[in-house]
Amino acid sequence: MRTRILVAISSIVLLASASAGAEPKPIAPDQFASLHKLIKPQPGESLFWQVPWLLSLDEALQKGAKEGKPILIWCGAGGAPHTVC
Amino acid sequence: MVRNGEWVTITASGKTVAVTASGKTLGNLPGISEKHRLSALEKALETWEALPDADKKPTQLALGTPDPERPLYQPPSDALIVRVFNRQFEWQDKGKLRYTVEEDYAEGEGKRGWARFRESAQDTMWIPKNEWTAFIPKEPQEGQSFSPPATFTLRLFKYHLDPERGLGEGVTFRGAKLEDGELTLTVEKVTPAIVQLRLDGVARLSQGRPDDKQTRYDTALLGHITCDRKKGTITQFDMVVLGDVLNTPRRVRPGWHPLGIAFELVTEPTNAELVVPRGGRDNAERYLTMTR
Image (cartoon, rainbow over all chains, first blue to last red; front, side, top):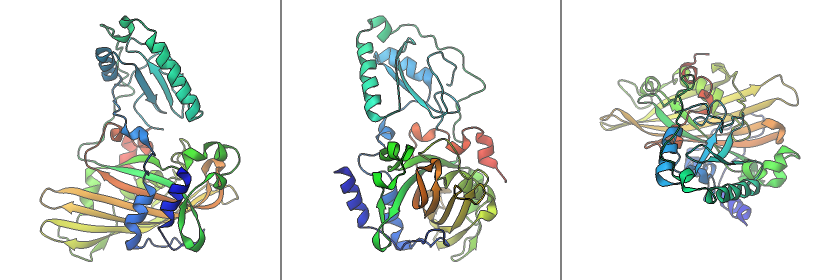
């Protein structure tokens, strides 16, 4: 169902095709806004951005101890827990 | 503060773990699938519920020692923070784009991860003050055009037109050069209050030798930038990139497929939006100042 909804949303849009491997076709100014919106997360996607993450592990430990809550750590390559993959 | 800790294990592709403030591991949360992760999270919560209050609300914490080799790295003062969204598409009839579906992905990693790959992958781009101030001529005239700073263009080509975002930790076009594309800033509107510019151009990026496994991205760019002249700030940096990728990395989609990338200025960043961009992960200073 979700797939059908998203495909339906996308079908109202765009755009003259760029031939694969050919010179990139300029983006028409009147299609800018719709294309920008189409690329960005749609409702129900990328929900992890709504989490009020903390960047400091020490701050999280102190907050967790004070509020009596467990801590979820998401760490990525290059150092824990402050970096991205 | 980033510290060494016995209950945090780093892998190249990231890791999630649930812990107590007292330092007990409640559970590792595997990223194999949403189902596995939720199951592991439920078990971690069960473990949490069974703990004594002394573990749930410890009165003393062992915070350890900050690791001087890995300081918390913040965006430079006055740098623009721009959200970057990459999304794979497929062409349908009459040149329209559609979102991808399972059938668009190759066997193996493509089919296993398609539900994640079809969503937009995300990153941030930092644009330091010396670059964004160079976007605005001292005496702007409508129709005036010029090239953006080379450091900006290089950072964009190397790290932010990357078809591997969302697939893995690689950087597809790390070797990109200035001559791999052309970007032009054009002053479109000048008033006492604002200057509006258009950023457009093309990039033709490639990785490796030209064989049947080479990844390419031949793409067009169009952006809109607005400067508040009285405040001396950038109030809009929106850009769209659309072109075709040959051989999406990790072999999840062999052949040519469209990839769109959207850029959007962040005005009030959340903590998550302060995280170092992928391109600056290993050396943020170089990311900000690269000249080749």
